[in-house]
Image (cartoon, rainbow, N blue to C red; front, side):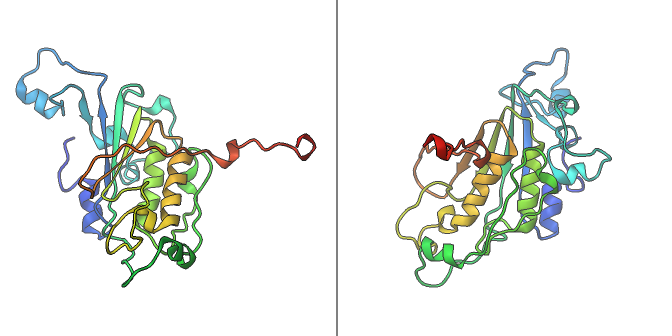
Length: 237
């Protein structure tokens, strides 16, 4: 079940020109295997620090893997072959291959917002795989990757879901020119679409990990579904 070029969905997507992105699942509920040789441990995807890498065909998170089977989405926990209390799913996004080029000269994020079209994301938990995604005009991921990510995140029952991006999500740094400093805030509707997609997926403990800066930061984004907001009645005001 180990990955090879013929069955690696990330490699196949890259060959098709869709980008280099994918997901891997790690299950830490099993830390030891008895009476096994080193070669057996290696072939069984055991991690040095404990736990093991779950093959794509067992994880059933990647939509392109699921499309090869007769299994229908969405799943429920009875279909899961890994621990839902001791597992981590890592989603690696490609923010380069399909990114809208930065404008020449200075352009503020406010101007970017006016130049973008509308962006819509689904709001139904675990039913989003059939929803239509309208990507913003200024974008990082591209239509296919957005659709893939929406389905994959909804398929995950991992305890923690880590979303990896080469560019930072939260900061809004000066200057606002993407040619100088690259970050998701330069395409604000694409960033909001990402926030909405993560929130509406129902994924457990989502965590964003990003790079491209020579420093370390811990940042938090408080989000709430619009359906969860309780509005006071006019009579109660």
